[in-house]
Image 1 (cartoon, helix red, strand yellow):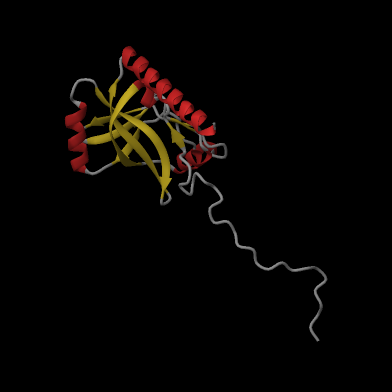
Image 2 (cartoon, one colour):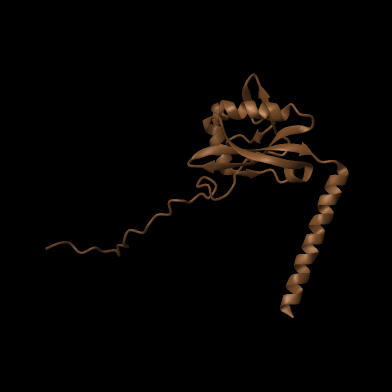
Length: 175
């Protein structure tokens, strides 16, 4: 005779495979929101980035700041400068330097194309976002041209005019 169980056994509940939305690619690890305010974003493209283990864990934790960072083509390679990835809290002596220069991984023909664009006056490479795709960290770079002060004011005027128009439409629909 089999022994009776003294406690209630639950059926195997399905585990949530995507617990962390950043690591699953559902949410960006970092977004450079000020980039569209300071620059005209002409063309965007995706690059890989060479990171150490503690840097990847810090990106998953959201300890990334892209505000003052930029891309640079040097000796036929693409580099990400001034990107701050905070130290991993459990990283001990193997932790990384927060502001180290990181190599971006792109094809040679894309690098040749970027060399031509960045040598033009006023164009630069600005990281717009950092996210996970298939378990790998990706950086979205944008070819950007700097805005003057009047360009920023014009963009703000256009944005407020569009907002007021949308509000007027919603008010007229409610009546």
